[in-house]
Length: 341
Image 1 (tube, rainbow, N blue to C red):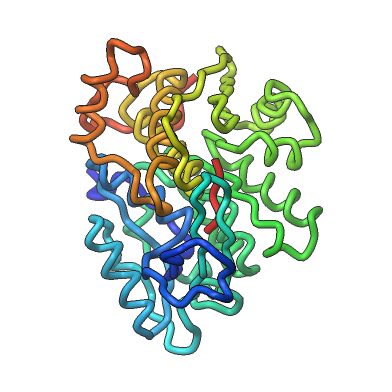
Image 2: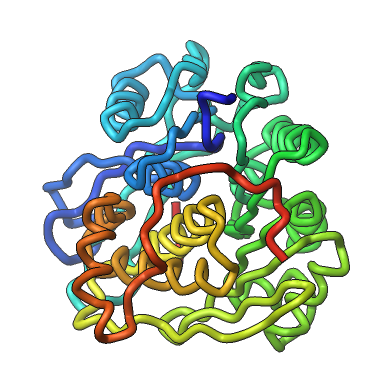
């Protein structure tokens, strides 16, 4: 039996968050954190009790050591993170907002160590993981990282593992919109569960309606699709079922970055615990609502104990996540907000 529940991969950057509102050019005080949509999901799943392996690459610098130390403190297995002596760890600057609007984010990642990820980074024992989560971000970093994404997803699916995919579009990293659409859809077709935002799905498929977007991916061999509708909730469709799950109201939106990552954490964790797709969407909406109520990309992602406590408190209101279960046997894909980093 595999010692790894979930394999995730991508780029984790250092992040310097402004400690006060204003133009980044005028800010003099920043708080150092980490950022990365792929690692946000990995952290969220680790907090829920899953054994998560992280495949990445960082520079032989202080920011790289900071990234690894932070991820290991979150419980991630970082034994297969390569140290690159020739290329630096990427980083970003993030503004602070007080009104719930999207913060300004400036990236310094071109030529980073993670952009030099390649299929050579694949270690055989990682392929024993029972689930692979992928996003479209590594594929946008470079041709070699894109090949890594294709090979990992292909090999894991061929081995009977379940695979989830969040497009997480980053148009500025691609040579053209057409290349982004073609390559992202190529990856999506290798997944069992595809988790786009509505605007992403519209751009990738050319369809406006969530039902048509979902049908596009089902026709490509995907087993289920959940389309994020922001505060309105999510629409889901499988080959047997479809429906809409309302969003979870929050008192105040503090930081929108990472909401989609929280959604992915909820979906993946619930599906790997054998919940129905509809129940998984309900949990996903709840975890996403947690994410937007905390400052930071992954700070609001709950632990298993916190989710259990919220479940008990919210049962009467009907806003609770799905029934809490400890990770058990993983299915192999048989189940009939926004992210900046």
